[in-house]
Length: 113
Length: 112
Image 1: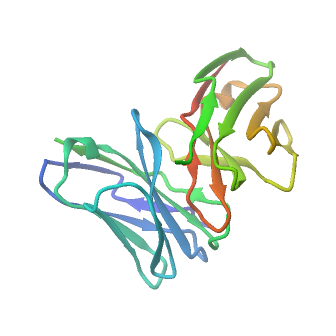
Image 2: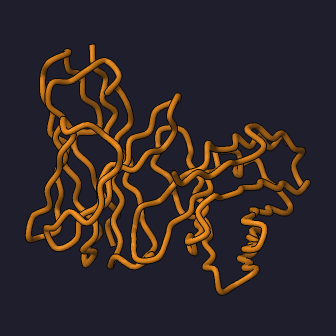
């Protein structure tokens, strides 16, 4: 079975721009969660989706948003990029929503200049 | 808010030695505790997990123990090998949610 895939793998943007990252979960998985990883803050939860509905959201500003499609693929969007948004953005998928094992993708490395 | 403390931040051992990483969580409602290994340039990979109705779980050279009373859980790696070198993260989650709260990570270096 193919693992979680994320595109693009690397991205360079400038301040003020917006960016959309994509995540394709493992086949059959219906839950997708997003995390931000930085050297200073570590791994932080962004949001979680199941059946196209956001079930939980972390403490991030409204510039961070996401959605999930009927095929369970998910996208996250960051508008008005700031330098501090530079990070590795990780997507994880699981079968369901009750403490199911989460499998992570390789991440998208975003650099904001 | 929820918090997971992880120690040590770095750990150097000789090949064949054992390594122990400890985590403490704050949310008494947490009852799922996974451990992830992250190698350079890759996403975290689940290596073992434990649920609150179990005190210990073992998978070959890796074991995890959980003390719910003390809110502690630990990762034990025996007979370490150079390929065990990576950053290890503990995490916790509460009932009904997929939100993982991660520890700050432990960089494990296994020298041949």
